[in-house]
Length: 351
Length: 233
Image (tube, rainbow over the protein chains, first blue to last red):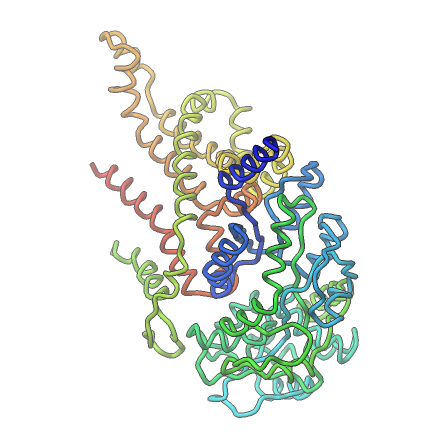
């Protein structure tokens, strides 16, 4: 009896002496999301679970994956510095192939069934659990013209009629790459490349150069050098209007044939220092209450399956029911990489 | 015309506080403190302590090596190779070694990896002053009865001061601007200013990027003003 008490006292003393940390590695370029995690999620985790949330910011998620691969090669199999990583697509494929993720992660299945099957064509096998969803949208300024072209063919025709007023970030930029994949899905590998090649001479700077990042595209659009912006975030235009980088007259649209969407995921590295803490953080981030709150405060899409909870939307954000009806899944990650390489040869470098 | 140097700084200050600033407006329509509320103390503290420690260590290591650097071509090649080695390549190669030594994800590991590009520049700068130093002056001072400390204090130290200052500034600025090596060896646990800056620059949040750039610029600007004053004195 006396020994049991001693054990409990030692345990309590240990807990009090060393605050438990949970380290969340994430792409940290979104100031509103960072602020939300620091000001809302961190105090909540502290009060409810006694966990200190530490955000480990990265410019590219691939940096986290290469760090884990090196750690595995060096035999660092425990006490890693990352407990949860925000991941999807090619980074997930690389991490899964290298065997640097712990799993399967078992969580309540609150998302549409498709979210648990494949991530850009890679079978998930429980190695990551869905967090939020994204879908490609285009934006135009209603102060410049009333109606945008709503099919790929109409867009190509519009570009030809307005030389120099359209461009897209050069793949492998995330947003530019997904823009070109709509041509892959609609017209096939060769047909898609041919249509993109056909547009090239009518692009901004005659297609001789492309913006390298979505940030440059945003700037060109805001400065009225081009007439369309694009993003993988359905609420991006509303966010930029609120932030003051887009005028309030900007609106978004999707193609009649649909736009590509995906889920992003949370995964636990093989050498995470504290797996229970990692699962506690994942449980909080993927809960209905958390996602509803993020939708209300940040304008993010509510990703769970089931009826639309009827949340207020940003001024330029499309209704969730419309987005869901126009949702197209990502092609296989391998084909995506081949298409990006072919784009480089047959569009970027073509005369 | 020296005031022209401050123009980009002025632009960054305006950009960090401006919102709803659209072409063709010459001046922002609205002002906001949003960007400055995203600036945190932790990255600044880490950047300052790392750069200070790297500066002192690099100069102390470089001082005894500057002489051999001038005399021995093999050492010269080694130092120049280290200086020209891309920091990313060096860090990727060292990551495995640092993991085995338990130096990753720590302030000490990051300081050590910053020393690799910083020390060669300190050596080169100090060697520059040393090559113009006339060793006969030391012999002269000794003849006049000066001890080793007095020789350093009154003869060699003042003669090498410009090289020491240049080497220190180089070491500071190199540590201050490391990104890839900090991210890799620090594992994201040691947050520095460049790490905070890169994310916002990539996502195109120009206001936050401008605010962080001003913080990032402050130390090198103060340093160069101080060095320039030193030269004029």
